[in-house]
Image 1: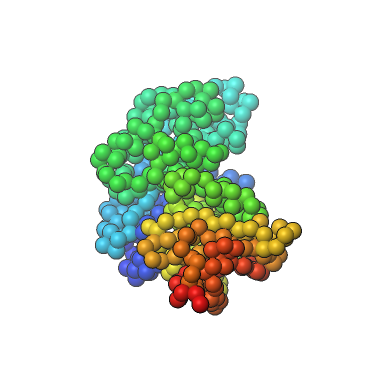
Image 2: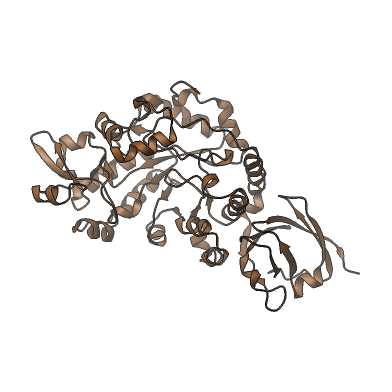
Length: 471
């Protein structure tokens, strides 16, 4: 589309395609209003211009609208049609059985949010000495009565984001105002992805700013759930704080560790990560790319990409796909930009994802019982069994076996089955993602396992069916 796109002009046919893919949720990034101050910073910041130009060789000033995380107000941006267009869009999703997720950014605001002028006390203020010693973390901001030095929004490990100002959660009025904002926007959607959710935890806030904040998430989550039962909270979270946020009430937390271990290309850390408690895994967000990460089609060669996708999207948790990922796009699009480059669809990657989505949409992968499977040496001294990642899904009389050689070389193993009733029957293994069909004796499967000899990055998604009693 070569014209500005409001939510109302998104064709019904595109929403039908989402439903046909088996998707349950649509997360809209950057729907909230941004302001001229944030836009100006984005357009002039020298460190960002090279990235923008690499994404868009024909970059124009109007392509840079400011970051969707430098929010000037939790109202839908007028360019998208405003709050009314969002509600019409939500209704179109609802009739298709798709839920709507939006963003909430708890840590900071854009510099031209009305609160900066009206309630400067809501923000982390600094001194002349702070500005002199840390110009990368503080700035002068005009308020209603005078110029105030405010901190940029940041986390404790990096310099501040210069198109934002930091909210002060040690002020109870700030927390109350943000709680009211979250409760209000919760009425416009079915779930919220909460950006960098760990930054407002009391211990993290104190480590960053030297001030103690009161707990925010349990109170606001309880209030929203009382108003909207079933409302979904998803946390973007790092630093091994995922379990903490799950305990505070988040339904799902980002699983960046699985992402990073898959990018490292070594099976053992991936397999060990998937030994975590099932309840934790079921509440993990599995992804290969997002707006902050490199495109997986650019970061991996194709065999590794497909193998990583099979692992990521056949384990428990919420399966999270990014715009353009299914088409094999390679250029990351900054949230500061209003458009992306025109890229050629990678037909092989698209065909792969269409097949994968068709299979993981089946009931067995949605509500079945998952369990990890053990691989052992195919013969003494062969250590390539460590290159395998395998697991099973069961639902009534349906079994699926997923096995991946996540390595650069051919590997062999014996796959051990957790099922007790294999002996005495013949079994057929049909690879749903390939052409392989194997008939195997259940006695062998029960006592020594299924022998596998797989090429680098090769994967199988087996349908397992009982054929007949053994002779």
